[in-house]
Image (cartoon, rainbow, N blue to C red):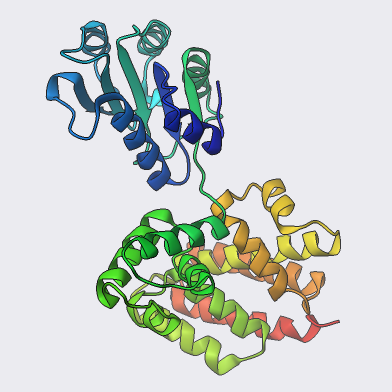
Length: 348
C-alpha cells in the first residue's frame, strides 16, 4: 500500500508495523526520521547487533535473504535497513530476485529500504516495478516535505521543550530563511537554542545574525530589487554573490527559477487558483508551497507580459553562458540589465 506521511506516522505510533517499507522523497530528513521511528518500534533504542543490520546500495541478494530468514535472538523480530537502494542499477535477474525476496519476507523480519542520499525517480521502469512490489507486500511512502506552518510549529515546540521562546512569526521567518529544508531547520534551531540558552528568546535580530542566507534567499532579494527598479541594490547583491565565489551560471539558474516561480504565481493569481492548489498543479512539494504563496504577493503589480519577457531574457542568457566564449559574469550582468529595461512594461 502507498501511504501519506500522516497515515504512516499513525501506523507507527499505533504499533502497526509491516514487513517491508520503501521510504523516499525530496526531504531526506523526514525519510531518516520515519526510518528511525520504525527501528525504535521494532528493536528499541539500543538494538542488539544480531537483531539489527544496516546495509547500503544494492546488497548481495543471497546474503540479504539469509539474514531475513534467520530467526531473531531474544526478540520478536529482526530489522534490516538498506540505505539508498537503486533499482535502475540492477540487471533484470537481480531485480526479479529482489522482488521475490520482497514478496516472501518472514513474519520475524522487517526490511526497510530508506533512500536519503540519492534521488529516486519513481517513473523509471525498474524503480516503478520495485516500488510496486513493495506496495503489494508492505508500505511505500514518498516524503516530499511538510507545509511551512507545520515546520514553524515544530520549531516553536522544540524550543519550548528547552524553556526557550520563539514567536510563530519568527519561526516562519527562520523556516523561510533556510527554504524549509528540514535538515537545516533542525540544525539552525539547535544552534540558536544553544546561543540564547534556557530561558532565552530567539528573536529575528538573532536569526539574522546567526543564520546565513542561502543562495535562493539572496537571489529572491535580487529579483525583488530588479522588479522594484532598484539598480544599485540589485548590483550590490550581485557583487556580494560573486564575492562569495558562486559561479555566474549557478546564480543565473537560481534567478531563472525565481522568475519561473513569479510567472507561475501570476498565472495562478489571474485565474483565481489558490497557492496550495497551484503548488499541487505545478508539482511543488509541500515544503515549497510557501514559495508560490510568497510569489503571489510579489507579483501583484507585475504584468504577465513582463514576466514572460523575463523568462525569455534569462533563457537566452542561459544559452549564451553555456555556449559563448565570453566572461560568464558579463553575460549575467547584461541579463540583469536587460531585466531592468524590460521593467518599463511591468506595471498595469
